[in-house]
Image 1 (cartoon, rainbow, N blue to C red):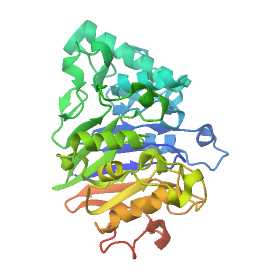
Image 2: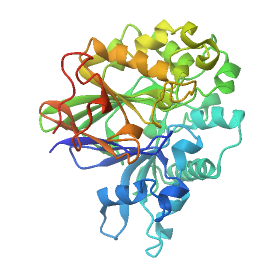
Image 3: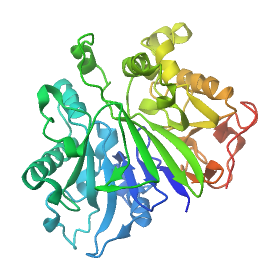
Image 4: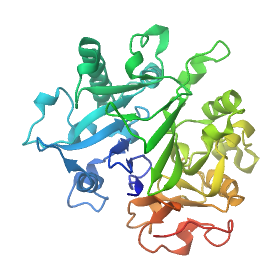
Length: 385
């Protein structure tokens, strides 16, 4: 069967669902705003849409196979406590009917760096507490943990705090194909960040900016085809620059068919300069751009953001959008803003299907302006199913 990648319309935030060829489902981030839960508000009800895409297990629990919060900002974890079951599996309530999380994917280093900079929001604290509970359960029961207690640790923590978690630890640069404790040949993911601290890195700089995010490059198979999906949370320029300096000899680590533009099309993922202060004089960081420019033919860049205007806003930033248009031009690719799809007044979920011809956009017919460059950028715009 085909695999799918869905980008939900959540404003300046992220909420991405990967449906593997095997049928397993991975949710990366969420921004289920209060307005989205209000039936009298026209904000897209992404929670209801997500639930409609999930199935129930033998115990009647609506479930997700894996959940990753890329970093603990509100626009990446809002709605967690309201819509997902946290705590021991036995405490799941039929009356509450919250989504059951079979396996949690967590990066303790991301949360540690973030919490040193600012106070975590309640949903971020709840995710962190649930991760700690599951780690404690693994330490107590090792491989006997089951659905609802499983956790995968993405990246080593500082001071050896994860040294005893080898069985559930993925180190930076490594790949993995396990979901909920089982090998799945339809997915391979490479962990690019967070990177452990090195002697030449200024940890205070990492902590003083919005840098720490889990970055994964997925290889997904579907119906005989393959697609690469690069997901980078809110990682900013210093991270992409350092990743390219570390892995420039291995450019395939960054290659993508679909890139979810970091930090909702923020200029600060491409430049150290302020767009609002320097305007067109702001300079692109060459190494960061290289990391984000490893396109395959027909590559798409997706902006999970509000509509992008020609103004001083950042994010989303019009200058960043122009830079991504230039990046995909030579690959005959396109860019698409979720907040403008199919129009600004009523945005809908963007869905790609990965089949024998690679990734294809599956959606209602779109206005020409919705996919920038559909006729003017490159020679092979995204195919529609």
